Length: 432
Image 1 (spheres, rainbow, N blue to C red):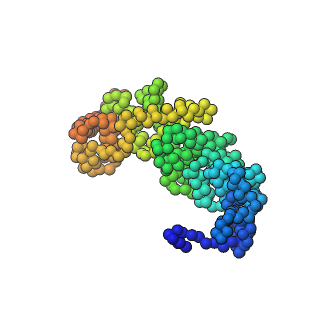
Image 2: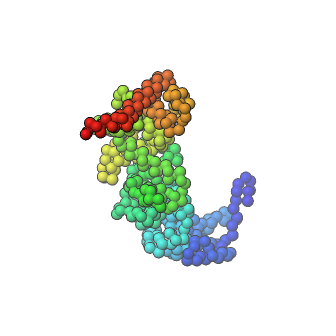
Image 3: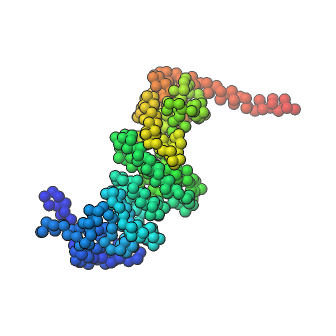
């Protein structure tokens, strides 16, 4: 009901009964204030405000005290409460992390028992689990929330893997360590560097770093990242979330090969980084031009999330943070230096840049009668040329296209002549 432009919900006091295989009550009936309070998930959520007496009523006789002490406790024995509705385990963890409260010891024991874990898997939909996890990751204390999940041996219950995959020992704690390091790095780099969505997905990407190379095969025997399975099947989250995190994992591997060139005293040469045979005829006049091409293509792949991918790579460069030598200030300095180098190359938002020539202009320059894959190939070459020559003009680009295409056409004609039937016959005669 809307009262003075405020939505107000009216509900009855009630008591409930549950079946063994569902968190949905099988029976609801009117109850007393005490019955209504005792059926709730936590004592701190069982307090009533009496609008007549203008006082708080604590029918569990401990809700106010638990609130003062910062303690997460269930009104009834925790195992009974969790078996009725196992989602309450995750809610307890979320509230504990959010308010920096401590979990009651009996509650932790119940949450970690096999019966409650089995009930959580059987009775709670993956959508509801995913929603709770997302609230934790998006909240103010994601590291503490995931630490609780890990400590209570719930990590692989929540983030269940494909049947073909088996987590290695200690993998869950490694996941939380990467998350913790990322959280600390973002605090140092500055929240304003990333928007809410970038921070949210950076936490997922960091947490699943140990799984980034783990694959399973689908029905067509195609390798699929298990991270994709976690998002789409275990958490039932958006397909775009899965795609972004997988893309971040792929991009960070490419950043690792470029990082030594962005930071002082880098120990790698760009000659060791393969640009690809497709771009062999793109003139690269300097190391910087090659760096511009490699970095430009990478940023065009990951777009607005390039800083997140860079941050992920900093966790692994120059050494993996799991090696116990993680110094947040040093990693922050690396991030700032690399970000500055990329900006100095003029590549921020490079994906918004327009090509010097469009598809039709390419076809006219190369005298092509139809488009298709040939034009797509030259569009990629043009982009590489444009990245390597940031001050180049459309006319200069057109002349390069014509010259390169003419040269490749002559080379193709020569090879065709070399491999022609008459030449093959001469070679045969020579052998005889």
